[in-house]
Amino acid sequence: MTPDESDLRARCAAGDHDGALTAAVARYGAELFGFLVGLAGDHDRAGDAFSAMWERAWSGLPRFRWESSLRAWLYTIARNEFLRATQRDRRNLPLSLAPAVAEAVAAVRTATAPHQRTEVKDAFAKVREALSPDDHMLLGLRLDRRLPWNEIALIMGDGDPTHVTRDAALLRKRYQRLKDRLAELSAQLRPDGD
Image (cartoon, rainbow, N blue to C red; front, side, top):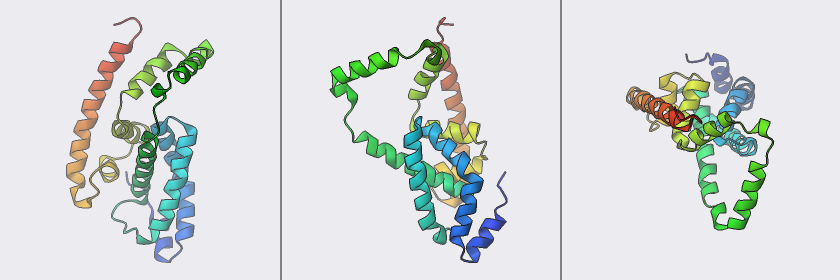
């Protein structure tokens, strides 16, 4: 269901972009931050993307045309900022190029208290690692945020509002394939092998 954003739209129409964005932060900030934490798997990385997202939203709000909900637009910005950060992270050298450091990191990770590292958490981490950022994002938007397919299509589609129906159908199919793949991965990762 698309949220009622008439108050935010009225503020924008009156030129109160700061007030509209401040109200949007209060309304959507927690869910957007949670979305980014889910994507990043790291509070600090999510915080960086979250800050960059609101800066981009602040500079872009005067040009926002209301072809989608403000919420969908903000999710799109959050997604783009996360992807930008991911691209920057890929430029860093992988830890595998420093085997001694990688071994030290592995030793610390395996020495973590047993109550903090269960088989379930490990299996979930393996399944999560197998997902592409877009697949992880699709699951987060649909399962965690329960966004309607048209809004997900606006966030993850090609950006053309006239393609929303087509993009939503493609994303629904992709979501079903992803669910099937996750079920297979989960079955493979069970400790008892069933």
